[in-house]
Image (cartoon, rainbow, N blue to C red; front, side, top):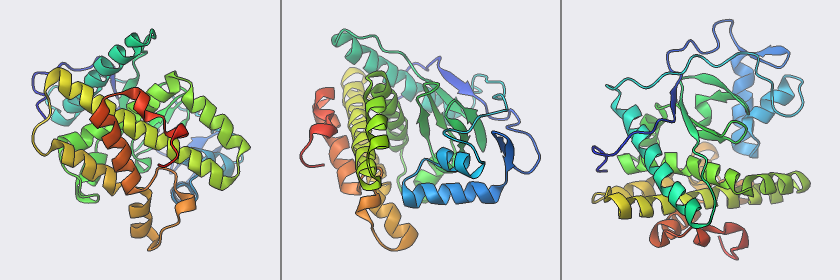
Length: 295
């Protein structure tokens, strides 16, 4: 990607090197301390059952709903100017701001820019304790995107999806969840999931995630149109990333079989299709996965 001359966002919080939660052999959630074994159980349940790992941790700690955070976040600061990956992410975030400010303005709305938090290991969020093992995520409670930049190494080495546009796609997907939150879509889906059975709730999650993929595609198209940032091979890199993190691909790798009713993000084919739909049209109105007869 041609990003050298692009501006950086002012909405970056760098919590790396802030000491995290301190020592003690676990995390304090609600009234008790959870060890690493409990955290692993939560992450496994999240992957195979489609349950938010923060919710699992809350149940295991004896709480209800999202776990309460007793620790405050480490002091945030700007990334050092020598950190090229952090600067790249900051430029990608700035490009999402430019895109969505324009899209919202065209519909008579005002876009509220999210913060993007860089962290290592664990960090407190308004949605519970964030874990690097969860991968990048968005918390609607504080309107922040969270990412441990070591995920990009995993994207390259484990998922075989190298390239800057693949990394940018990950950021744009999470910002897509912020857009859904601002438009009220996330709340509607969450309310519907609470009334639904497990399979139907998972299906709703798939539609939400595929819409975020489509919104990432809209960002990609509009950013390239405005700033001519894409180079040959960039689009293919993003499509490779979307393919690599499809539920069918991940399930096949993890358990040797595919269970479609447990999908929470969509198959590789679906993720590619909806990203391409957003990218090919650049039109947010083409991203209504909830009215699509076929995903």
